[in-house]
Amino acid sequence: MTPALRRPLAVVCHDAGACNVVLPWLQGDPTLRPMTRPVMAGPAARLFTQRFGSAAPTGAPGELEAALDGAAMLLSGTGWASDLEHRARLLARERGIFSAAVIDHWVNYPMRFERAGHVVWPDEFWVTDDAARTIAERSFPGAVVRCFDNLYLREEAAAVPALPATHAPLPVLYVLEPMHSDWGRGVPGEFQALDHFLTRRAAACIDPVAPLRLRPHPSERPGKYDAWIARRRAEGVDVALDGHATLAAAIGAAGWVVGCESFALVVALAAGRRVCSTLPPWAPPCRLPQPGIVRLADRWSGI
Image (cartoon, rainbow, N blue to C red; front, side, top):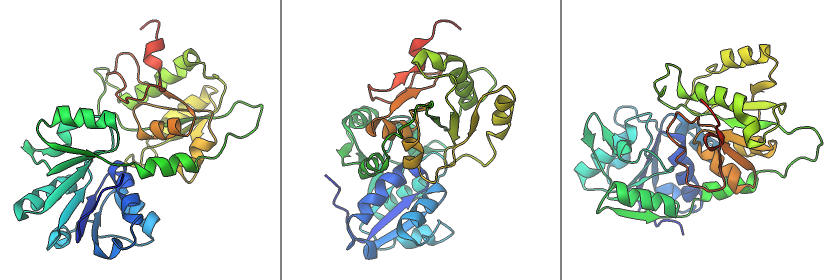
């Protein structure tokens, strides 16, 4: 089931996750496009242009207000990297506009709706599976939580090519993401997880000589992993950045898809790939609810 979207519709997204969920809903109804007022900043701006072939306002002064003027509804993302979506929900509340917010993942629900101690809830929280619904109902007591189809997940899983026929070890695709914590060890968590994977991948029955291809998160700066790659290559590890144009193509070339808690792991699992969370045992446990994900921390035998 897809949501019934009121028109005129203001759509405000910054981070990639919720934007990926929202855009197929918009694309699926061609009569909706002329009545849609998009504001897309950050990674969402690129995703919007890729799907629709044109740029959207990015939230410069006055653009957010213009999108909400006379709107019947606000549909917003719930990313952490900006306050754009938060400001949109605040404006919608002040103007009495119905507001729905899309939660695309399974982590950090309450903090998505707080900036500088100011909490702004939408009128409804929208999720895309039963596990997320349970988390949302627990996180937002008494709130309206609705569940709709994740067309993006279906699209991405269907676009993944079949495994290539080869006797050589298939590459391992590592989908990266910032962890926003060093877990008390003075090194960013994403790098700790990378190092832990290299030393423990055999515990998940992953071939230690399989090429390793890193796919950075859309929010990460270019070159972030260059020094790590150079150091590991000097040690003889076959590692490089993934060069595929799309996530589906990258997953299609891989025998395993690994990472911490990225939604890309869920896409890979839906496409029938073997999937592993690389979070080390001293980090908080992986919060992805899918039972098919191998937890490397569960196969740990020592610190």
